[in-house]
Length: 183
Image: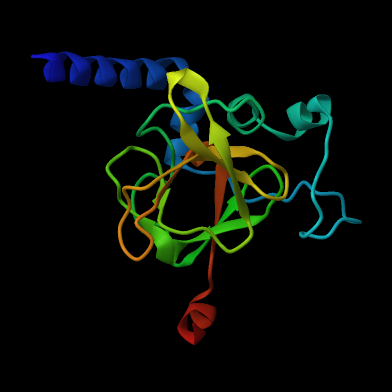
């Protein structure tokens, strides 16, 4: 009985999120293209430090809430929760444009958030998160330190890790067919 009550509550919250968070509906239908916000004098290896006001100018309210305030978007609302629908390519941080994950490491975890079993080396940082009365491992963009989600040890081989990422923090860049054949 408890399972059915919790499941019903989860679906009610998801429906409420879709009704009250219209930009999530729009994002789910058509994710925005990647835009790199770093000033031209910075390389993609430079760590970004912007003021809170600058971040608010550069990000949508939903992106700001997740990336800068460690928020979480509702499950099953993001544009990248479906697996492998975008073809070969790379998932980038919407905050700074850094490459984070490749499509070859994406899998369907059933969680309602995009899941990956491995980030691109050196692009995702980790730290302990003790919020909400539990200990988890938070993951963030190594370049802009934007909150992405959490990593859990219940993923598939070869790593057995599940990087559970908020879709609103990602932008997908497809790999042209000629480049993907070289790999």
